[in-house]
Length: 187
Image (cartoon, rainbow, N blue to C red; front, side, top):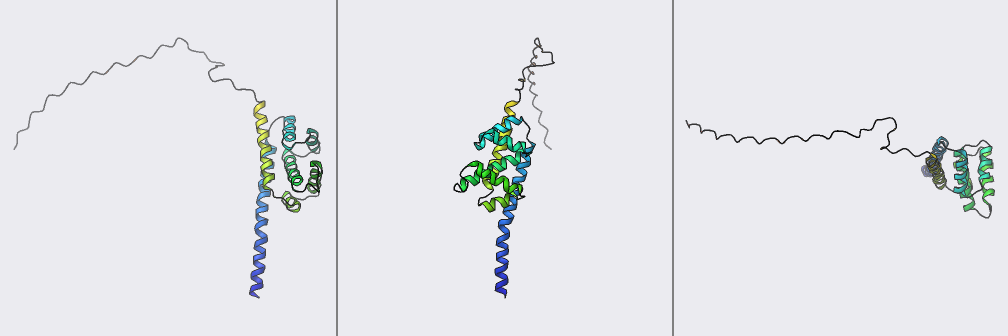
């Protein structure tokens, strides 16, 4: 009886460990999705960045955006489709087939972690791809910003050209040596 309980407990613990790691990955993926959604920038630049990163036509990304999907969700679904197409090319010969499967699973309410487990891949590479998307968005925003003027240029200040030079301090005269103290008489 004790042996059966011990085996049952070990099985439960064994099942809980992957589930907790799976939940941690899903939380990390959700956080990355929110970070991507918070990035600013031109919509067309984001479409182009995702299309380039995942090697798809910009129209694919734009169609996903037209379905009211957020930038984070789009990049995660594209990353999951890439993993699925690489893992099972016989079932999903094209990227679009893999993307359709991911979108169908997501539309049915399946979470990213469950979907990855059911399709047979891990979320780690998906998280890495999503972070790369975030970096691409941030770099595209930085290239759009106008360059800052150099600090030497003054906008609303008066430049001092005839500034007097600082006078040097005079050298201190040496202190005269003190005369030797007379010896004190010994007692």
